[in-house]
Image 1 (tube, helix red, strand yellow):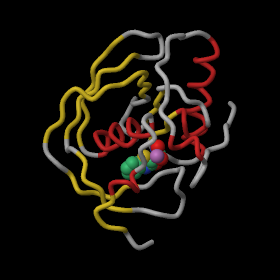
Image 2 (cartoon, rainbow, N blue to C red):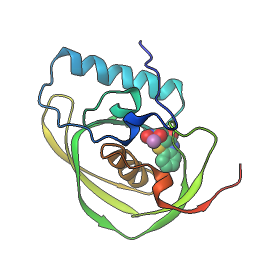
Image 3 (spheres, rainbow, N blue to C red):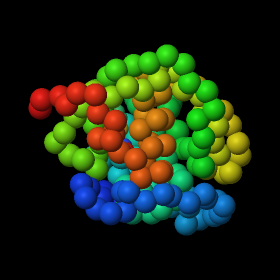
Length: 152
Ligand code: GNR
Ligand code: NI
């Protein structure tokens, strides 16, 4: 169990583009484990490596569905459907929340933690998490897409 510190607010790393992962060795495995530890400790539903200062295209997600502990490496959105206008927050932007427009259903193509390709479709919160985390890989934050700020 190892926690890494989450980069916040105007930390410039949050605006950078992450690089493709080509190595699935021990350093990458350790980073993924630390990302899960850090995400659960912070009570988030997702985390991108850039949020712990590592510019690699690695995402972990757990929205609380049974058995769901997702690792998405070099992910790409290949299909979307519908819209949802729902609340969003970010561990890197504490104390704020806003309504954003995201697709209701999203299919992503990615590599798992062993480097094997797979596809996954999510709806609702999972679809929103896919979009939010993939945005992080390109330096995009939800505050760039706010429809309405939520008072909190
Ligand atoms: O924990 C998180 N919750 C959340 C809620 C609505 C939309 C997106 C998210 S992701 C966020 C964790 C985070 O900042 N991941 O990058
Ligand atoms: Ni975030």
